[in-house]
Image 1 (cartoon, rainbow, N blue to C red):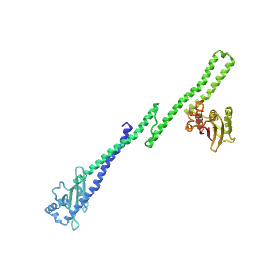
Image 2 (cartoon, rainbow, N blue to C red):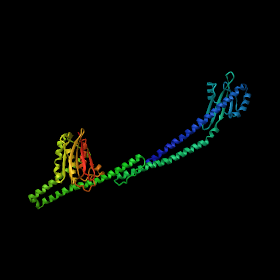
Image 3 (cartoon, rainbow, N blue to C red):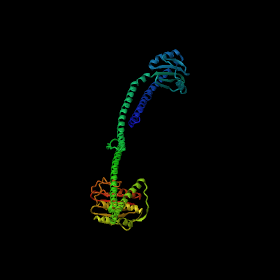
Image 4 (cartoon, rainbow, N blue to C red):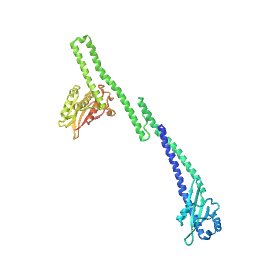
Length: 462
């Protein structure tokens, strides 16, 4: 019973194995004990009372054993049972020859306590099924002068329930068999998808490709299949992103390192003796190495985000003045590409509690992407505020972002499939911007459509 399928089968069959036999026994008991035995008890009580009434009309019978014997011989065939007569003290006067045992002492004790009430006892065991009733004989003076007893074997009545027992047994066995088949089918229906899901998760864990699971069955199994499919797609995306990130890192590091190595080779040669050449090459080396600093900063920021060690030097900052300091240096980069430059920053923006350097990195990343991906048109920076929030938006007229890519543009190393986009950079700027915005209690939002440009908005709490 170690497999889930076996446990499912057992859990579906056990209720039928336990409940159906109990229900059958209870049904049989109710029919026999509550209905048939009740009617048999009533009939036996009525016969005993009727014989007692007959004896009361002939009280001399109780005084003569011979007369009592003849009365019993005469009445026994009509009574359909064994009849016996007792005096008022419970002693036997006469009894049917077929009476094998003396009167029930329990009944006699009950009669002594209630001398004017007919007492009935029913014995319904496996080996014996009998009924016995004793009725008081009351004379005209309302005095107890004797007792009439009637004992009847109800074995025939019990035997009459044989077909009913067999029918109930067949119904119980049929129900158990049907329950087992239904339980086996249901267990397979439940265990099959779970086994497929387990196998798919195992393939995913082993790094093997896993086909999408069919989404059907009960709601929980559908949700499980959808979750596994989403996980597999996410892992495939992350694996592809990992490969592209390595390619981007090799590209970003290989180009400046190649330039530096080429400069070193020249400096070691005869041309390196020329001061002008040496100065030019060293300046180029310095430029390339300086260009690597943002790359290292980005990687350091990603590491801090992954380890939860983002540290902020927050301070109250006048948003209007700070935005001008951050935005204005990008004007030259935009105009150098022939782009229109629009800045709308109200002078009365509220004060915000931020790390100016880190938040400047967020706005700088948004502006860098806008300049990088916009080939014509322009870039607009505008800010607004409410009682609870300040918003800084960077809009461009670039190629826009497809709807399917928008939820993922903030993932590290993600690059969309838009062919006009450049491959420059690692694709981590927006991921860093989002993590810094969230570390300040804010968020980044995006509105974009292919061919209509993009608007990134930084929301900061006031």
